[in-house]
Image (cartoon, rainbow, N blue to C red; front, top):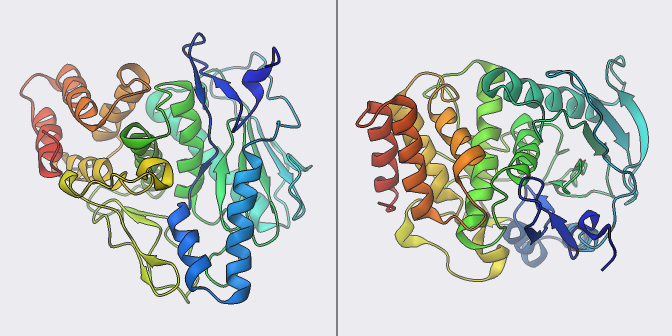
Length: 364
């Protein structure tokens, strides 16, 4: 393999930025799980099936492509955002044409403004709450491409940038509409630069859960919602009115986000006894994330107040300093408890909240 092979996405190798001697298979991290699109292929109309096939195929094909532009880091002052929005103009070529840069006035294109604003809110959240300087903690610029593909039903982080489809208009709306979706995908970048959780099985489910956790927290932070005021729905507003569902996942009640004749029923378990053990979805990375999602929700509700202040800090410190690429649920539960004890004291209410939450989802 060539010397610059760590730049290859998908079927190539991506060097872990934190542990440079270790390498892992890299996936693109899509917010819409494959089982939802597979249900659409089976139960949708002829046109809907075509859109679903296209989305699945484009996601698969992209894994083998090289990125067109390099994301080179230059020294910048902490807290300085560097956002660039590109327009793929319904093609599959990345990154596309630059349509808005940092400090430029708003565009007439809603998707451009939504990608720009939500990337900025995510940057501000990590900087103001956790003193993190962008995705890599070194001021990484935030590149986003909108209008990717034709009726593309997904959004993803490809290891270097965000990519958004416009949705098919019948079941999914444009993917820039939901700030938690954007924060979810950008958090895959944070995980990439920190714990580098393997994207398979329980470690992959923890990877997905981390993105849901911080996606939800960014939305709550922007809306100034306490844990009991939040909806804890990922992708709220993403479905059209034709879909029987409130979003793509519920952290409060995994398995209840949607029950639709075309998209199927939300398969997420809320308890370890119901863990999916098959090989689909990279060993259930989107499915089993319901278990750690529920654990975080329970922790946040028990502690109370703003979820990002204590529960979020516990999860962030664990992601940054303690979790490793192969961490499973049981190891994660121990780590979160240890971090809570270190931050707030052994036997503290915060530590007890973490321990009780993991016990409630069947992970002692």
